[in-house]
Image (cartoon, rainbow, N blue to C red; front, side, top):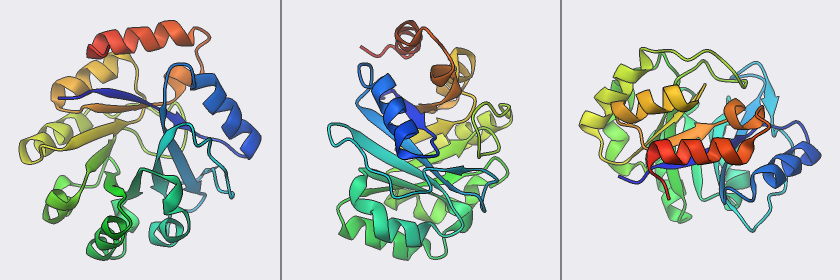
Amino acid sequence: MKYKIIPTLISNNQKELDQLINKYKNNFNYFQVDVMDGKFVKNKSNWFNFKLNKKFKYEAHLMLDDPEKWINKNYKKFEVLIANFERVKDPLKLIRFIKSKNKKLGFALNPETPIINIIPYLKELDRILILTVHPGKYGAEFIPNTLEKIKTLRMNYKGNIEVDGHMNPITIKQCKKAGANLFAVGSYLQNNNNLKENVKNLKKLLKIR
C-alpha cells in the first residue's frame, strides 16, 4: 500500500496561502487546500478566489454547506475533490459530474457520521477521508474511537483511506495500523520550526523514501 503525507493549507488570503506553499515546496509537491465557508464549520478558510501555483498538485477538502456549487466553479484547479458527505445533496449526480471532468472524487465523514452512509458509493470513489477531529481549525483534539471507523472501512474498501485531524507521529502510527494510507497533516508541520526534520521523521515512520 502506498503511504503519503499531505500538508494542509488553511489561509485567510492569497498572501497567507502563498506563504504556506513556499514553506512546504522543498519537501512536498502535493497539498490539501481546506475550504471552509463559516457555515458548515465555524471558521472560514480559502473562502476567496484564490490562485494556486501550477508547479504543484492539489486536492480540495470542502467543508461547505453547498459543495456542489463550489465544485462547479472551481474543479479545474484540483486533481481530487473531497466533499463532506453530510452536505452532498445528490451523491450520484456529483460522482457523474466529477468523472465527466476526468477528476477524482472523495467523500469526507465527520467523526459522528457512520460508514454505512457511504457504502452504496464506495466503488465509485477514489478515496474516503475520515475526520479524526471535529473539523474547522488546526489543533483540534484527536477522537480515539475514529480508529474503529477506519478499521471498519478498510474491511469494506480497498482504495485510499485518508485521515485528517491532529496528525502527529503518535496518531499517524495508530491510523496506519487501523488501515489508513494517506495522512493530511496541519499543525504538526505548520507550528514546528524544524520542518525538514519533522518531515524526515514522518516519512521514516511510514517508510516513505
